Length: 100
Image (cartoon, rainbow, N blue to C red; front, side, top):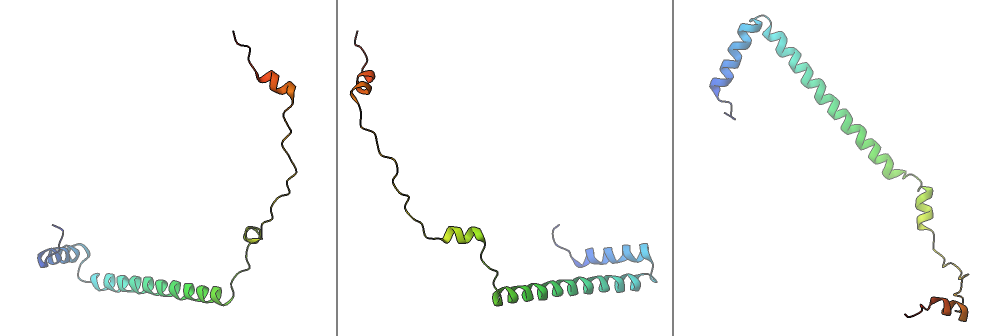
């Protein structure tokens, strides 16, 4: 079922011949050929444009973003501004729970 045999192709050709008639088939073939040619030309044009853009990007790379520059900047250690306060006797006494 997945493959087309000669019988399948002939059956489709006979149906096309009956449906469209012998005078319309050459016009349909010509239209189909033009459509396929136009599609291929469009694909080639897209490939050429993408190659040009890639070549331009390789020749003139864009400047790095500001976020990338900030990320790449050397880091400095922050100055130690806070120190631990020594424990006082009053805070130590309040932490003790009375035993019952």
